[in-house]
Image (cartoon, rainbow, N blue to C red; front, side, top):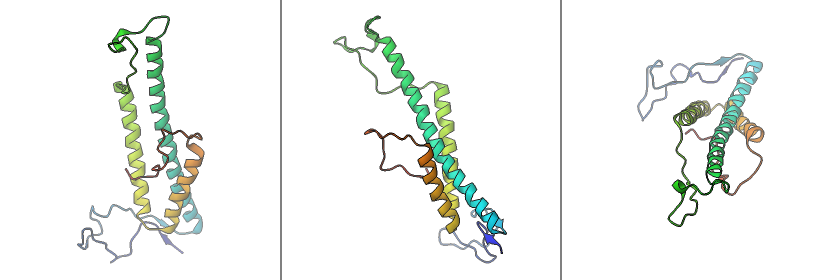
Length: 174
């Protein structure tokens, strides 16, 4: 018995934008053929998909921690500059002489590069997950959902803050 995960039958061409696509090798159909010939191979494929989705949740949490570390470092720097032993740093004070804490932190090139790489990898994984889901294979779709749930449970911070966006958190494709 053979299961088709991404492969289409010959003659089963789906067009884009209302036009039929008669060239199975065209760039419009980017899905590669993956054929599994046993239940064991299907289970392995589903476990791999679940692991990829769980790793996406880990990466999102890691990116949040990177941002948190950058902000904590900036807050520590501001505390050091406005230390009571050193007096108030006049460069970061308003006309009354009281310290002003900037709400925007200028990132270094290294910090921005790290954040950009993390973002690009997140987009890559999320687009891959979207393509897997768009196969409409019930096994793979279930694996995506299970992997997201397991990843969220295992890797996200177990605290809740009023500043966190808890309602819209999802495996979005971008």
